[in-house]
Length: 450
Image (cartoon, rainbow, N blue to C red; front, side, top):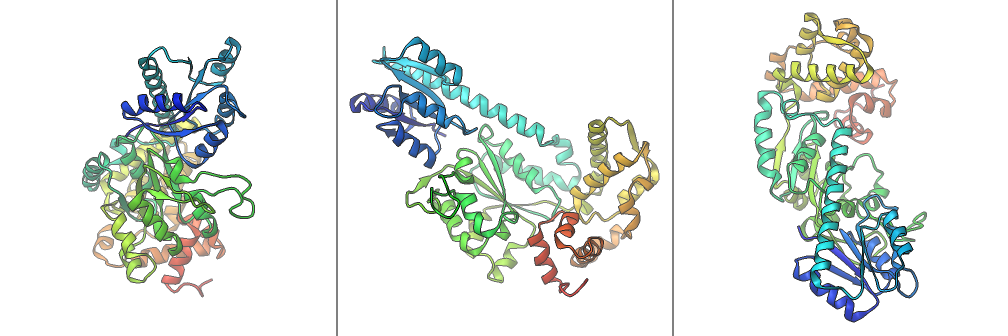
């Protein structure tokens, strides 16, 4: 992926020289005659590096840098000057400017060298940020992520598609780890030094979702006091994860299709096309094919995102993974709160093996966390009150029964009962969005149940 460089220089001849040198190295360039124009471009597009003159009519190159650096994902800056003082150079480098170059250039190679070093430094910063994000998100090791025989095929598919650029559709019930799978695709790809940007399409109101994805221009709507970049721009060079894509309103599906096809879009309230290099990974706990049949999802968008489908098995199909996952969560949570928990007593282990886990890995994780808080030494069945309260369904019967919907329906009824029919609380108990719960309530004819 070629780096994108913004050249800000009021001297046309010198600007053309800089452009020629950089393009000869394979870099993609944009130009601005002054800092004000550069700022407009920086608000509209994503760049890896800004090469700017120090002294220009109006705003200076350092003023431009000090405005842009407030963005955590700001590009690297190299400042060119024929007039700068030592004090200005020291001030600029102290504030975060990568380097200063004097005009005229000694030779083209001096520019190439500094640009290469600046881009390498920026790449290292992004890699470090990605590592910290991975650590802070509790990203599990592979032996945990892919525990169980049923996950072997998933691991192979993720490995196969990671290095490609194809759009990926991850399917699976709530709580099966779709976002972790999407992060794994990103971390194993060549884009892993750039951002992984998640968007939960069900958690954002419809009237705000377009702005969230594509950004908006100043004055585009009430409250838009300044231009704002959307998630697509923030994910430039990296991966955009669209969770619960089945919740995307029809009004936005056409715009998403265009971005996937052309890699271009306009902000809300704007008329300028913005180009992005983004790999999209989508996820759903619905059958999108059924959504297409019911005219709730565009068929052309469905076929565009379903280039490489990956289906995550539910936890009831990964029985051999349950002890491994339970041990991992016990070590994780006991370490976090400073308790010494050695494991599970036989009765508790048998109970969690026999339990149906309608909330999948998310429910197992939450149950273990609560048990670690309640338990001492060895976790007992009494430390798992939710498992004791719910009837256990025989796993063989469940595998043979076609009524997975009936299991989900009972879980919804129970969650509504526990929450006093508060749908927001019930959705939290189930680990799904309120919008998904409303859809399920309507689908199962539960709207009159109290």
